[in-house]
Image (tube, rainbow, N blue to C red; front, side, top):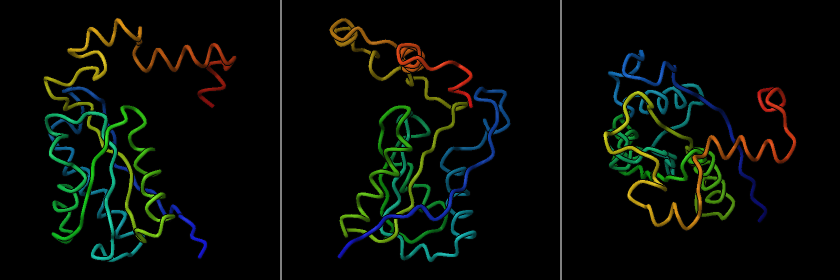
Length: 169
């Protein structure tokens, strides 16, 4: 049987400045994601008991973002205790990877309904939240000559001939 995976809808939270003076600084990211999950449920009209998995990407896997924020947020949203959840970290690509993994679950026939996305509150980083590749990894930094992802993106765009205006369009 041929299967297809569909993105049915998308919901996002309000956003504010990613600093301690930001409007959402005092709101735990788990609570923000719980509101988003229920907003999606209300808009689409699905029964959370039918959700096979909640897959969320989170580049900041420490502090308020730790302890499987996908599952904790589903529980915080009042979804079934039986609802599974998994949080993954692929740095800046975490949310997109979560959607890809959700599609794989559906396409494989292992799952039918998966809620996927990303979560991160830049105004609430853990004191230990630093660049994961280089934190305490001087030997990796020396071995691979890595640069931060934002600089990497700029370098790739420059090498490939994309202007700032094209990237922002």
